[in-house]
Length: 78
Image (tube, rainbow, N blue to C red):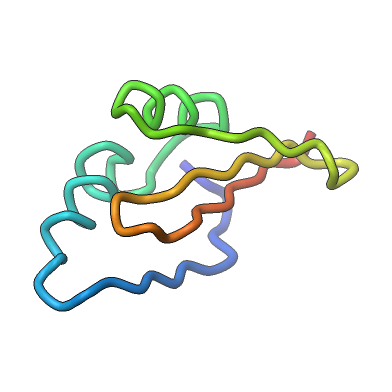
């Protein structure tokens, strides 16, 4: 489980709640993922493209997009 969640903000068209719920509750387990590697594994298994970013010293950071086009940024101390 994450030690803390900085923030989450999602935009979606009306009526797309089930699409978002399928990713966030189904694939990501309600965002209760033990570490970044597990998050990347779950996203990959669900067919989501993941991009690693090494430009933040001291952190491991990854980007993905949800099915509604929102960019997801996740990071973990190195």
